[in-house]
Amino acid sequence: MHKRILAVVSGAVIALGLIALPGTAEASGVAASGAGSRATTGSVAVQLVTPWGTPLALKGIYVGVGATTVVTDARGVAVFSKLRAGNVTVVPHAPHGSAYVFPSTRSVKVVAGKKASVKLTGAVGAAISGTVSADSSAGRLVDNAVVAAIPVGKTPGGAGVYAETARDGKYTLQGLANGTYKVLFEPPAAAPALKNYIYNYWKGAANYASAQTITVRSQTATTPPISARNFNDVLVVGKRLTVSMNASVLTTVGHDFTAIIAGTHGTSDVDSVSVTPPTDTTEFSTKLVPGKFTLSFVGRTANWWYTGQGLPLSRDASKAAVITFDATADESVNIGAFE
Image (cartoon, rainbow, N blue to C red; front, side):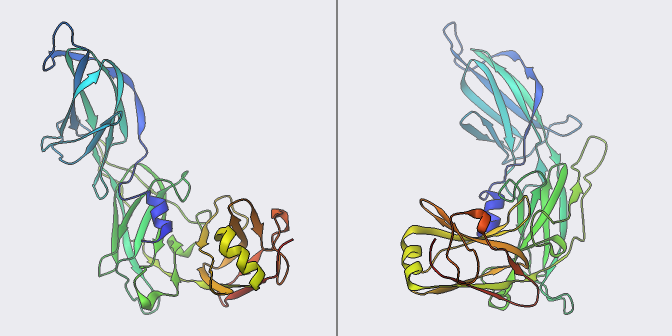
């Protein structure tokens, strides 16, 4: 999976933006196991419920209290024992791929020698679905493409939900909480026929800032989920940026630099592509979506910026040259030395 998608989803389990609810659940008065006059701990029993308050028998939902996580059983119940007395926050967390969302946390008061009960509401999340193809005219469907829904207000590295396309090119991003999303498409890495394709946002947008939004709503006590269907996408052919440098620059790059980044110019949300500098050649290349970019060399102690063809790299970002990448031609840059 591409680093961009990994950054979006932050690993295999996706956090869904939990919001604390006011109020505290008091202890029920039922004695906890082992309770006595010198008891210093209590317990908490968590029951998942539907939006209309009936028990939600859902196994495999993560429920956290502090550093402790318990997975719900087939009844939708998770029990925490030997909790120190005091107020704690109970945090539900659906695993990746779950159709359910748990948008609220609860605060509960743990009383020594007692068992507190708390209910957590779960609902069927909304979904975004569609088909991914590689050619708008031929309609070639793409399997194993990675699709991610990124909540608006989050950076491209923020929390999201992801899925892969099936053999027929179809995808479904399920378990989405209420909100507005931007959808990112990434071609499969192990597909030689798609080696010239690159990520894009829905409808071919080159970056997060210019991407269109999709609004959905999860299930409530009175309404079913409001999902978004037929959000189809055609993958974008990337353009190649080739960077050449002389031997003296190569020596420095090979030892002092950690990455080379091309970032979208003139937007508040910067999409970037990182490339590990070569150590055995004076030329390397990477794919970019069409647009305007600045090229920076990120070092361990300082950053340098590309300032123009054959010109030296500068530590002054205001001197950075803007590289215009259109949809018809690749681009090459040549680096001279250092200021």
